[in-house]
Image (cartoon, rainbow, N blue to C red):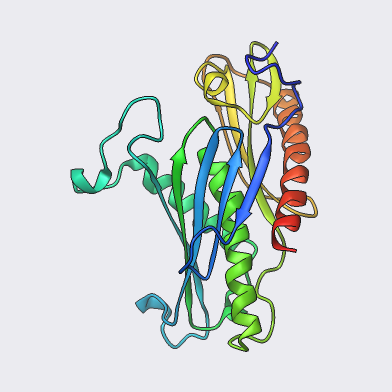
Length: 237
């Protein structure tokens, strides 16, 4: 029995509230159960120096967690003067994931930055960030196309991410904090609609697992991402 009472293949409730902020070209508040992430997309008519005059755009991500997003207050990284290794790793993952479903040449010489700020954390903050960032990106690109700034849609597919793990010997979908903190193994899957895999992060924590164990986690991830793709589609319809 999972602590939440969910079935092994049962997701937490997913909600996506679009237009959550006034100024960003695209924004949403995405919730996976008690995990809540504010995702915004900001369009800038410039690219990094190494991309200038190359006819290509850029999509990048930034990630942060509010001090009281967790059970105890965490220090602001700005106050420490540097980002943690975890923060850097997650925001690179967000950028890689969104670029996997973007034709950067069609975007033109402009940059879209996806800011993912965790308001409340209960496991799966990086996967919620990626799933919500796609919605914010889709909304921002829609505005660019409506304004005639770009002609062809640079977004090639939906992308979503979900965590899975082996909890008390059983593969389970969408880990919350209690499960994630005591799982024998946990994995984050970033999947593209249509069956392609963008990235997999899988780690044995308390016990190793075999090939069948990994495949069972992947099957669960496909179930979860299917539900996220549906929620994303409704959010941007």
